Image (cartoon, rainbow, N blue to C red; front, top):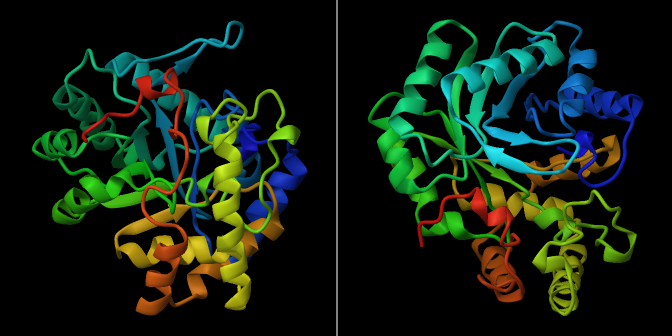
Length: 310
């Protein structure tokens, strides 16, 4: 997502340097989407792959449409739309199939069983390897799994967004589905370099996010600084510690931190080498107790996509 300019501009050179570093570090899973920069992210990955789909396990998504001119968006899970969007993604990536294909957001006008039939057909044709859904409710996941195997559910999960603890994390475990945790660094709020809203560009998705506007941001910043200090006291960084916390929550969680730089990627990977004791997990909970974040995680407009279940 960072390659698509959501947190600031990047270049193909910098993206390729980051991807090379990923291979060096043993990171072999890339998660992108057709709407990340309206194809920019997929193109940057494609020019790095040069047709070799063995370098990474690659996931992409479809189901959200965007109007480049007016900035509008909506959801479409119709079979012909998903097929056309997948073909576009494959062309940009320069490969003939993806290992994992997500429904980025549910189109509520189409039953999930029908969507599963579309995905199973694409899988049968060899266009996709696995099936995934993003931000769906546990009840929807159960319905989907009754039709065929679902490999992954992607949900926001971090020290400040813990809704998956209220249902989807347990349901994934029960059904043998991976929980792919996006924004595990809380969009930079539990990381080594804390964000400055004054520096956000117009396209930065945090610019209007409730947690990054006042007075919420100042409250959240105070918590984040305490977490930073705790990480330093334990000889690590807030970034690495946040990743380690996410991994420690359950063995079927795959955190996918976004980055535009090789240096930040290395810091994220350092979190996989940390082993957190029960005492540390308790202390982290005291510093950042469940529900500590001030403000909702999305604006009212953005809440049109994720499925609620609490």
